[in-house]
Image 1 (cartoon, rainbow, N blue to C red):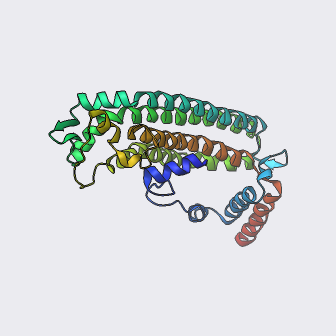
Image 2 (image 1 turned 90 degrees about the horizontal axis):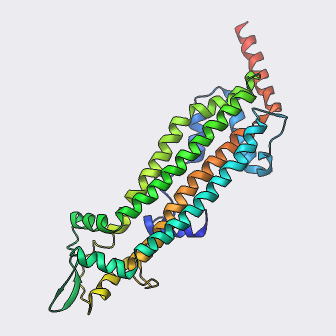
Image 3 (image 1 turned 180 degrees about the vertical axis):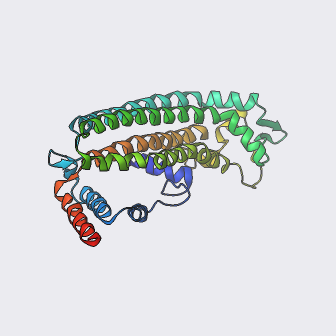
Length: 305
């Protein structure tokens, strides 16, 4: 996770984490999963995960590994990084496009034509009372289309990554078809697809919610209405809480920068997660771990006798 994404998380959510109804506890989730397995499978799972954390180089699999697929491994190692690089470029173009659309001239014209900035005897001011209905109307008149465009990119990334993993899974199953024990990891991967898709969908759905909350936070203040000497000066300060140091010519440009970092980060997070997932699965597991199942089988046979 790069620093720009970390900063955007804090700005967009007010937290240092991307939250989806609570922080995911990896140990608890793994323990819960292991609780539904027989003891040998649970031990193999924990040893497998611990090995990837303790020795990252062990991800480079080899012929001694059960469930290892050379073709799938090579495909995952080339396709997922290429996909992430492609979407980095797409978001660079996305950022440039929307920074141009939120130039001060365009923001001023949009707000003026929409009746959002008005003039009285004291000067120009933002005609927004701060109720949720008006805030949502302003959101739809300004930021909404940009969020929709970002969601399309995110959905495209998810769709492409899902298509890639479908192809990798088919190759994986084909290459290990002659080894019954090698069906362990493919079966586990397939059984978790529904949970995976639901989690990614929640992450995808959180984008518009987080963005609107960030947007609305700038207009819920009850402070006295501020007046400006010109309509352009007023337009520049709409949403000024997004631009506290006045580093940008108008506050919407600051919002666009933070949003682009956040949307890009979320999208690449999903792509990189798919890559790490397949690195983990396609690594396979050590043939030495088969002793666990041999001992378990002996104990089971002895108990039956």
